[in-house]
Image 1 (cartoon, rainbow, N blue to C red):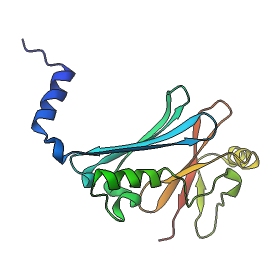
Image 2 (cartoon, rainbow, N blue to C red):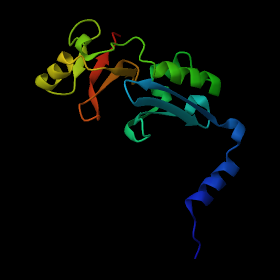
Image 3 (cartoon, rainbow, N blue to C red):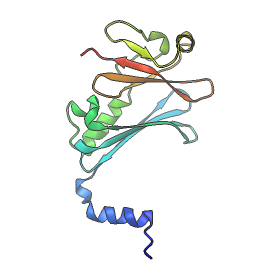
Image 4 (spheres, rainbow, N blue to C red):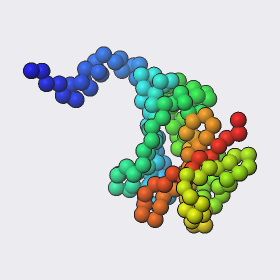
Length: 165
């Protein structure tokens, strides 16, 4: 009976996938006290990459993670990331939080860039009153996802910031 291990499968995949065709990139930054936001992307080409964004504790433990097909996220399509170097720069921009509010008290539910909260009004009001720190990033072609951290250190998805379009 043939026993195939994961290591053998990975090794075989590496032999049939030319290394010059693969595209990989990564970036990270500090968020608040003791948290790191990481992003990495990999694919057979940069245009076909999948990107993962995560939040880790100082200890290295991942406490939140989400993956995206880069062709479906605005940052990666305008202009298209064509090399690992360009993809690395795009990842840095993606996790920078630039262009978004920095604290929950600035989120507005109406207006030109409306915010739609995930939780009930009371929970949302609590984060707004506390001026909870935000990390928002583009999650598609027309919106951004906004995260904060609760008192227990867990990541909370507060809601979605829409773009006019």
